[in-house]
Structures are given as structure tokens and as C-alpha cells.
Length: 341
Image 1 (cartoon, rainbow, N blue to C red):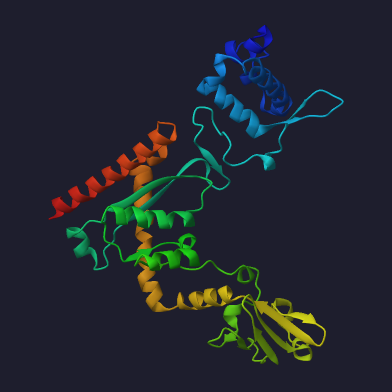
Image 2: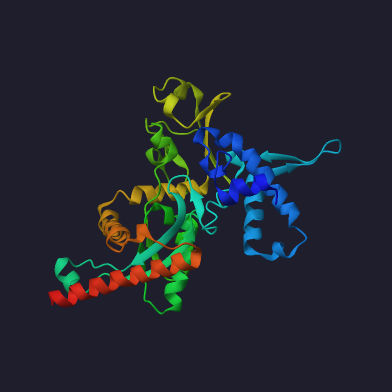
């Protein structure tokens, strides 16, 4: 390798060393690093080195963050990809190539945890500890809602009895509810607040809807003049003159078109409306309040079992450590229950 390249990355000495660059100079040094990386990949492409794990990692870093622009008139140009063009599954740390990125939580992995819970009060909890029954390690790029089905399959394969799951709204998608119902499990999860509600607008929950999903009256009591239902959408129309004089028009989802004010929504939106109204009932709140216990469990895993301070890297090692810490917490809870008895 050229002596200048070797000094920048191997000896790490002098003002040319890459890791001694100031943060303000990083944008200037990145193209230089990309050209050096491209040279290394081309230099060892047809040698024994291309079978090394380190060579594969260098190639992955280059493909994730750099683009080679080929033109017929000039030589290949090396361009650094914009941050928005770099996938969250790209290499975040060469020492841990399995880690991924999440804008909210940063770099690393995400652990999914399921545990039992007691509904009979403190006396029952003293004789029957809450135990972690499922643990999985997922990338930071994978949504929580995608993990429910795999968790149910894992419990069924290990013959863990399960009839009800209390989870947050991320697991409460309609597809998850239907999949769990087919497996004999009832999922108790709220629905996310409607986007319009967050913006101060009127939503379908504030309209009077019949059993077929058609609006019977708006929040101000006006009835539609026409309603139709198809396989994809439901449409209701109000008199334009009435809607134009309403003080809630700016917040209302209707659209003024011609002589009428039209409103469209889907059958799926009607099902979500029913769930949002049901979750305001005292019965739902009583069933759902037990989910708060998992927050304490996650806190104990992070701090008491030091899950937030792992000293290992790589998915296999991280997964092994997560499972051992969950097992350790179960042992602590069983010991506390035996001591109390």
C-alpha cells in the first residue's frame, strides 16, 4: 500500500492521521477516505484477501455510503451518499456490523419481552411471581408490531398457555388482532390517536354512525342527503348550504364539491372508530391497566440487570447476554417469592 495511505490508517500518527481530524474537517476528509477505500477494494479484489471477513466488511461500508458514478467520457467518480440516502441497516460500527439505526433510539438492537401478570392484588403476587416467558432480539429498523405473531408462535412451540395479551398500540394493528384471534389469543391494545384529532380537527369518532358504517348525523346534528357504500369506500353527502354556514367547517373532514359537501372513508376506518370508542370504557381501562407492569420490568432489565451496559458486540453475543439477563431476573423474582413465603 502507498506509504501515505498506511500512515493515515495504520500508524495513526501525525497531522495526516484520519482519526485525528477535527469534527469540522470531517466532511472534507470523507471523500478522501472513500477514495482510499475504493483503491483498497480494487487492489485486493482478485487476491486471497477478498475472502476475508474484513474485506467483506470494507466492501459493505463502501456500498452503503459511497456511490461510483460511471460516465463514458471521464473516469469513475466517487461520491459520498447524502445521509437521507443511507439505509438505517447500513454498517453503523465496524466492530458491530449487525447493529442497525433508529432515529429515535440510536444505534444497537431492540429487545422484545413478554411476561405473565397477576390480577388478584399484592397477596397473589407474593405467592406467584411474574415471570418473563418470551424474549427476542430484533433490529432497530423492525417495527414492534411485526413481532407479535412470532412471539405467539414461540410460546405455542414451548407449550406456554396463553389466552390474552395486553400490549401497547404498536401491537394493536388489525392484522395482529386477526392473527392472534386465529391462534386463540385475545389482544388487548389501544388504537393510536387519530391524526386529525391531534391537529384539532373533527374525526369520524365524533359523528353518529349506524350499524352499516354510514354516517347518520354530523357533530352539529345535520343529516346527510345521500349515502353509498362500495367494496372500497363509504361516501356520504350533506347539503352544501348547511355546511357552508357551519362554524366547524374548517375542522370538518367534509369537502365542498358542487352543490354538496362530500365525506369519504373506508370500512377499516369504521372498525377503528369502534375500537377507539370501546377503549374509552371502564371495562377496557380495567383490563389494560395491567400493561403498566412491563415498564417496571424493562427498567429492571436495563438497570438492575444492566442490559443497557452490555460489554459485548455482534448479534449472537448480544442475544446470549439478553437471554441470560432475562433469566437472571426470573431467578431474582422466584427467590423473592420464596423468601416472602
